[in-house]
Amino acid sequence: MNDDRSDGRQRLRRATAEVATRSYAPYSGFNVAAAVLTAEGEVFAGVNVENVAFPSGQCAEATAIGNMVTNVGARSIVAVAVRGPGETLVWPCGNCRQKLVELAAPECSVLAISADGAEQERALADLLPFGFTEFESQ
Image 1 (cartoon, helix red, strand yellow):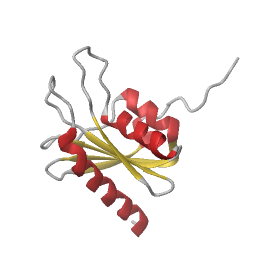
Image 2: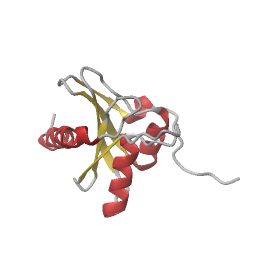
Image 3: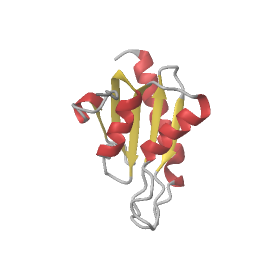
């Protein structure tokens, strides 16, 4: 494992820990935090935001992506971390996997972290092997 990759993982862990308590999850009680690492080395975090008019809420990954695009206009994600509550390892839902594929570098990895410190890592391509990668007109 090279130092840049290890440093990136540590920064993602820290970012998700910092925002984890900001989640708005009054209906499920399931607080999720996520962070994305850009090709430029910047980290952007987000949390899930529920809404009584389900499914109008927003996943933590979507919030982090929105923060990334809004704040610096970045378009290349090299790593993602998703933090769940307690012992739970949380992976991006199908919708968020596709959102990540849209902006992911080919080597993008996803780190699932539990609040109690367990973690697993997978390549985004393994989580969504046949994701849509570009619009093709007929």
